[in-house]
Length: 116
Length: 118
Image (cartoon, rainbow over all chains, first blue to last red; front, side, top):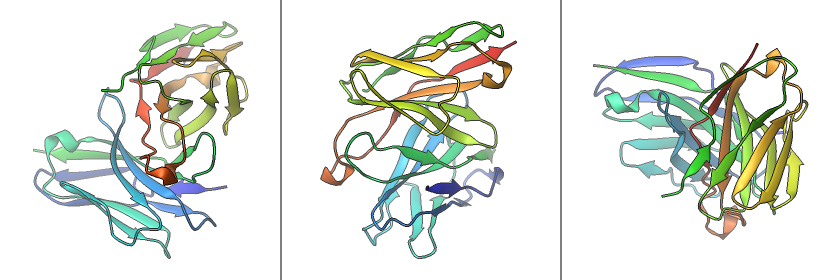
């Protein structure tokens, strides 16, 4: 079974700084998908960024980018120029595609606080 | 915009009560999921459904059941609530089909239902 590990339960940085959240996973699959989800306080969880394992290029979405190291099974999220609105729980997730519902396996989460 | 609505944001129930958590999505998604979220444990999958009347157990199905009689609605049932079921429950939905066909695989979540069992 796949597992996802986020080793940083909490992080705190100053506004405008760059912060990197870590995620490692364990799988024997060669094709899979990785995600970072954001859960702001008392609000719905939303997708931040997605990476397909067969793509060498790291995904980017505006200030959010990933460092995908397939051999090391590592998938970190970098937030540049952090903003107060980035304060949230961040979850890393793994998905193995197969016919039918494709389940996501989530990590434990990292609580990120951006300080003014 | 996709909307996933969970019927109750906060519930307080007593041990042994039967509890229904309702989830409705408005985007005709085939796949629906129930997760529970606990500090330090992240999100754990309870049950999921890939079509009407179809359901599969997730990683922690014990003590729960589900119902999906209509495509837009997925209910989580606690037959006899216990204190260890105190948690945040998250419903999510997603379009069906292979992720490899170009679909993003993105899950759309509801706001969550915080259940306290006394």
